[in-house]
Image 1 (cartoon, rainbow, N blue to C red):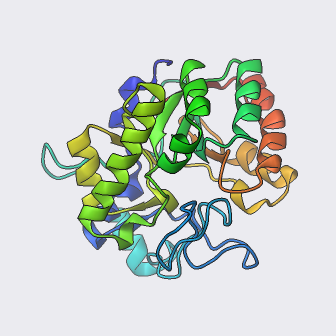
Image 2 (image 1 turned 180 degrees about the vertical axis):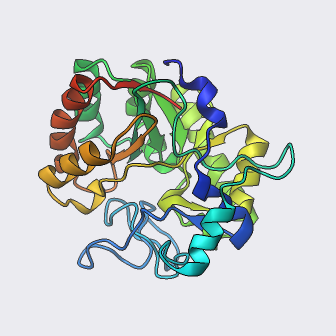
Length: 286
């Protein structure tokens, strides 16, 4: 699984706003295509008003009540304070957005699957270029496609818990958050024989309750640092340019194999993977 296991102590400085403002939403998440993005997209087949059916919406568009924009003065002040690590030993670990794995180490993360159309295509590409990735799986999807989940695990990839039905955890009670996390862990373990040790919050929305539950269940909270917004289908060239422009040593790249039509993502990965390897990067897992 690479040498990145020690990286679980790595945190992104902006993650600390979760403990200061009630919750932290990754600033890279933005409102997607209005024609496709309901108020609260979600792969869940039946969900509250802020969710949408599986694959019907971009997986990482922000809800209308997102945290203050990072360019506002209050937000800048909070982000400056967030540079401090947790105040006391034993405090919940903050979301990891960068690796510390030596020179040119990066991570590729694939969200919202497994999907019977796109996950096999992504797996073939990863095998071709000998790249190990982290798949953030939705419990409903793992439960519906256990063979695919097993195939991902058997290929040596890491699997992260991405909740049971991709709800926005920042708007849920601690009891519902716990249920979303535990049900996904059960589904992933049932399909693969593994209990995930990483957790990724849908929409990049972290709350104190989510971070506490991660700590209690022994899962490292995993965010990202490079978001090409492939879920919004901006075009293959846009996805490629975004990743190549923003990737640096320690980057955690966000892509998707579920949640909608991911043909652009697959096409972009065909270009991105060899380019990053040719640039001297090596892929590892958090």
